[in-house]
Amino acid sequence: MKPSNFSLKILALIILFFTSSAHADLACENEKSWRYDDQCRTGVIEEMDLELKTRLAKLSKNLDSHRMELVNKSQKSWVEYMRSECESEGDLTRNMKSGRMEWGTMQSFDISWCKGRMIQRRLHELHLIEFRSNIEPRSQPPKKRFEG
Image (tube, rainbow, N blue to C red):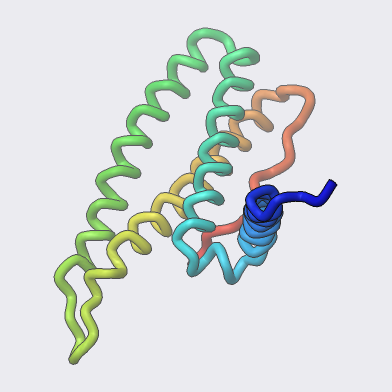
């Protein structure tokens, strides 16, 4: 029995979908890609945000109530600081123009780069709290991704 044209088209679309999504994942593994590609950078920030939540959960299970209360208080303040800092950095390029080039398109880049940088610092701070509290098993230090 010979496959119909419709079946072949569906099969081709399925293969194309899986190969293109795998290619996108591999492309985002390349540092240059996620530094300049909005979708890749967003994915890296989401991974870092998940790591942040995981570290906070680990601290919650291992710290006494007083220390955890202090961590939660500082986390709440940090979230507000990150939001206002990144909004401020993004606002700097909102209306910038240089010759024929409009810099307003850089606003989302500046905001996401700021978030990545801030989350990276916070991950390091939480790692130090974990380390100083002798929490076992020890987590690896966070990866350095957003610098400069």
